Image 1: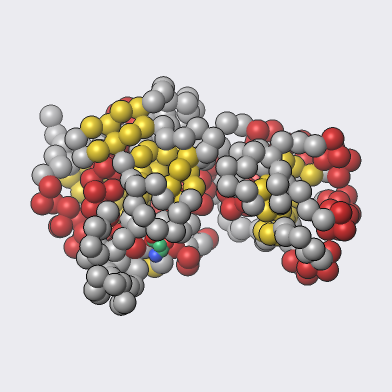
Image 2 (image 1 turned 60 degrees about the vertical axis):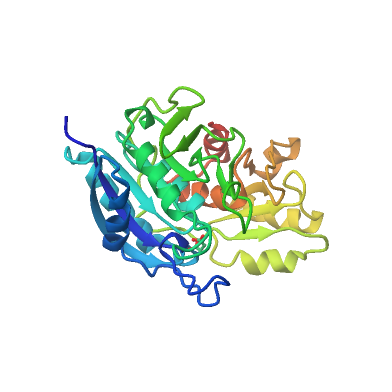
Length: 326
Ligand code: DAS
């Protein structure tokens, strides 16, 4: 029996970062190349064979369509390559949830795909990167990880891409949580325990990867925010996601601007600035042609909105059906 062969795509982030000293005075993301990283990981005798590819080496605040496109192409090829059993993407934690969700929506997924990052640089006191990576290897090499879409491994937790979100800027054990399902598994270097059965019975891509990403800004609602702010934000926009107060609410004057633009074809998604904020449809959403984000936070609502717009979706009812899908 040969060992599983795992493709590891490096994009940078803190997992590949260097602190410089215990106080992180000289912190820089994306300093360790994937070859060096995999050589270091080789010390742990993981019974897998690694194939490394440096896709980028950036802080994930600079993640976007160009690197997304490179990741999508590399992983789609790996799905067709019988010599690859699973894929790991090392990624900054700041936008990992967005990349994971985008790939979850647009990739063929007949093998495990796992995103992993770190809250502390590789040379920091209490660094978490290599543990997270070894955990990710256990998941990516597991037959039981198939049929679960793209997964994110952080802090001994396995999260579904659709649920994953970064909830803390510091700390290693609970920086990420899954909403609404919580963790779908617990993983350590020596064990992987799933909390349920696979849920993706169709390995085909749900949507085509966008040739071009439409402009979909996020309007962060707050007390007294002006309709003029909304108007300025909507220049060139094909859609807008509202990080609404409470359950996707906004000042009446802003709602009026968005309803007017929605009547002319703008996609308007009501999400919430509240963490773990479920946003369900309101009666006036039909009249306003608004879409409710349900369990998706604003940044993942934007990913879904861009993908659907790029795939030619235009009817609010069609958008809502996909936001509703667990
Ligand atoms: N350096 C930030 C990033 O690249 C944070 C991190 O990776 O944890 O997202």
